[in-house]
Length: 119
Image (spheres, one colour):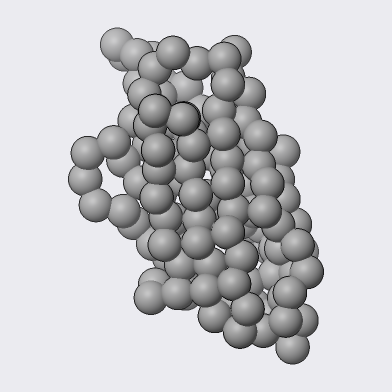
């Protein structure tokens, strides 16, 4: 069973930066995709950024040019560097990892970390 632990959320003013981290334990495989989603109050969960093992990262249009996703496979960790934060970025951010073993797919989620951006 994979367990994800997130850190790095907090309360900041608009224009500030935060870095989220998510480390997976209990896993001996390299995840096919690691990423971040967010859910604002009253809204559906949405993809923020994802990064496959091989390939280019993918970003939501609203964060392109401000957020950067990276991963360290040796540490089973994915990061989200968030710059020039805006009040619209306020949400609970969830780490997600996707693993494909043979024909079976697995998705794991972190517990979420709150990011609040004040104007």
